[in-house]
Length: 123
Image (cartoon, rainbow, N blue to C red; front, side, top):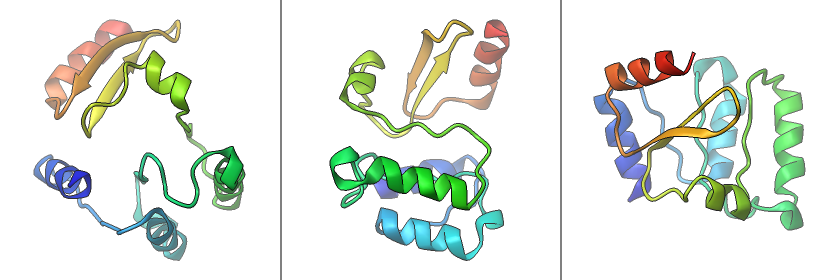
């Protein structure tokens, strides 16, 4: 359901969406043509890859190094989920101020104009 909802929301917002049925399938698609994608969203738990006990963090680090990803990657643990107030819906957008505090949160779709206004107020 989250996959279908995310696809619908992003498509309606004007994005071209490529859907994979698992984190592994998504990584395979990305590996085939990394320049095709501006953004990659992976399952929050990524079955078979989540948590340090299964090598998830190391796998993600190797992935970032291999593809020379030059933007921030966030791997949420339970503490981060609690600190951010949990993710109740996809998408959930958090606005972080210059001090690293959550300055705003949008559950569900947020209009571009709203986000732009709120981001500008934080700059």
